[in-house]
Image 1 (tube, rainbow, N blue to C red):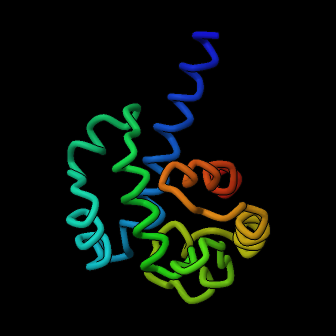
Image 2 (tube, rainbow, N blue to C red):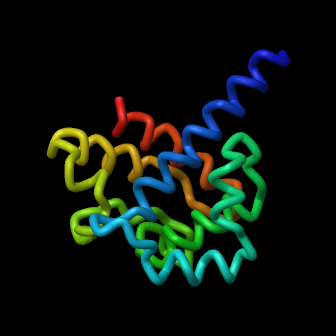
Length: 134
């Protein structure tokens, strides 16, 4: 059982790093304003989060939930996922280099993600972003 827990920690670490790359690092390598706002709102230290990627705390998940909401990927009112918003996000470096096929797979996977009601529900996106990077 310990091995399974360690594997989950590794997946969580990879998910965190991938989300940071997908949502935070724009083509100009600047931190978008909504990321700065979400860091303050969730009281999250980005350098600490990136230095300890295996230690996913609730504030880390809340930070990513905040980013997804500000980008319109998650509807703030009802928690539903809005994958078509990806068509309008042009400053995310990883989305710029992904093939149309991979983006279609990502959107389909995101459409299947259940409502994001609490911060830790962000873990549900891990599978989708793993598919994007495979």
